[in-house]
Length: 125
Length: 125
DNA sequence: ATGCACCCTGACAGCGCTGTCAGCGTCAAA
DNA sequence: TTTGACGCTGACAGCGCTGTCAGGGTGCAT
Image 1 (tube, rainbow over the protein chains, first blue to last red):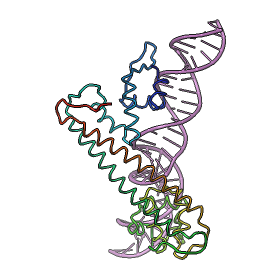
Image 2 (spheres, each protein chain N blue to C red; image 1 turned 90 degrees about the vertical axis):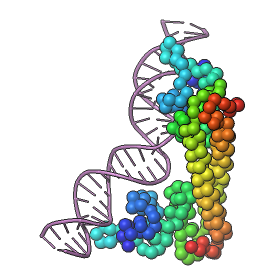
Image 3 (cartoon, chains in turn brown, purple, blue, yellow; image 1 turned 180 degrees about the horizontal axis):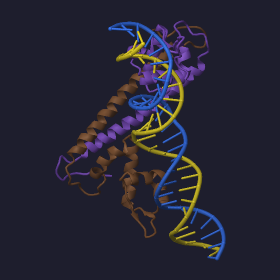
Image 4 (cartoon, each protein chain N blue to C red; image 1 turned 180 degrees about the vertical axis):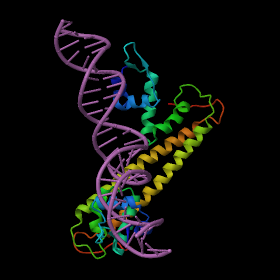
């Protein structure tokens, strides 16, 4: 299928599909005239890429991920490095989650201290 | 105090202090020769700015926040707009938190399906 | 053969900061 | 007065995408 179709079917913009290809993820065949020609397998991969992207992973991280995850058949390469990377990603996520929780309660605190609309309380340091 | 000192005391880089000033937050007096001259109050404000920045708020959001929050005495302006903004920020944070939770479990799922190092399972679609 | 939708590449812009460098004043101490 | 730390401004770069535009082919249907 052409790029427009896979774009619609995967929810990834044409722009980003080309970007992913340039970055070494998801490299479709080309027709004689140079058109990208995506297979159903490519579509599967595209969907996974989208999941990961939505999950906040960088292209660089996906680079390590995909070789182990995408394959429609069992993967045979040592995935220890990948495991490490994934664990790192989780750790990073946890870190960010914690930060954001903290932010959230801070803002909620501000909100609580906010005067209703007239002179009133202030957040004490 | 000069910029270097407030930088150390607030944990904000010199670069960012100037940036915040350019953005209209935290505008210190100037000495005759043009040096920035920060007061203790400025330091307080700087610390709050840092908190908010760490909390992931943009300068633009802080713009609305600070007039209501910073003041060392009760604030008298109507803060309804601020309240709305804060609530919006909380909502955004909640959204992002949810996304990230989802990402996290997705990755953890991948991790669980990962072969130990030899040929093995694959994530079933 | 003409048209129109769709594809191609390459390049520039913008997000919201943040670092860094250049080129040049200021100030206090030696 | 000279030195060295510190301050000033302005500007460019980079992060990781993402949109958009320009200039130009391809392919199918009238």
